[in-house]
Amino acid sequence: MACLNSDGTLSPSGRALVAALATPSTPEDVARETGLPLYRVRAGLRELVAASLVTVEGDRYRAG
Amino acid sequence: METTSNATTGGTRLPRLNEPAPDFEATTTHGVIRLADYAGGWLVLFSHPADFTPVCTTEFLAFAAIYPELQRRHTELLGLSIDSVSSHIAWVRNIEEKTSVTIPFPIIADLDRAVATAYGMVMPGESTTETSRCVFVIDPIGRVRAMVYYPLTTGRNTEEIVRLVDALQMVDARQVATPANWRPGDKVIIPTPATVEVAAERMSEEYASRTEGFERVDWYLCKKSVEAV
Image (cartoon, rainbow over all chains, first blue to last red):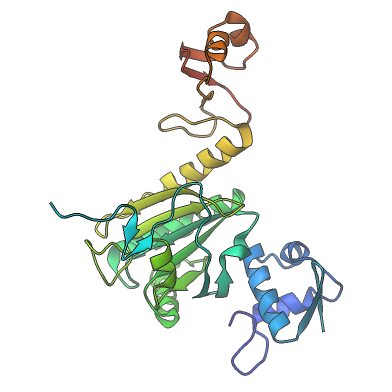
């Protein structure tokens, strides 16, 4: 798991993604804000959405 | 002479140039990654035979060295071997400990060989248990644009991979071709005329005068200068 630890807590990159999603953002926005490569942002957001920690509407993601 | 079926390995069709790259979802050292996660940018997918082996270690140091160059070209690296993710993690940590070089890109742990099979990375004539040294350059719309296969014994030239990416990006940006040993800043080849009319035009002084840096050997081999991509 890249964003979630086995105990369900967020990894460092997971925390960075969630922190960047206080306002609805595209993966490209998040990549710019966090400095993470776009592929890692896309993979991480998919994981966070599956864990119901992030919601997605259209192309924008938001924490919570 | 033994016979083998063309473009297949183990009954699986190999990727072909300018066709869609085989899709995948794979466990990597950076989590689960899909090919689609790289959409919009370039990807260099490469395999190595095994972790904790000498040639592969020199290659990983070389790939790490070109990673910043590739990132400047909107290109990511993704490694692969038939090893576990724990083995990959142990190896990259060992490389860092022994050489102070961080491996910044993910490595696929392809224990079920799903990706290796889809991309024809196992060459049974060489080894049935390891992937050969394969390189696939995949473009922003997911097409295979170049393939390179090296044997187990021979480490790759990573500067050539950067040069290859430069050449492919130039081809796409300017609709040209690149000559042997081309490097950014060199003249490029104007596509060969497809009609006698265009061939005649290519021989005219008017065409030469309006083409920056025009250089003509004959109607079928003409070069020009272009702006960098």
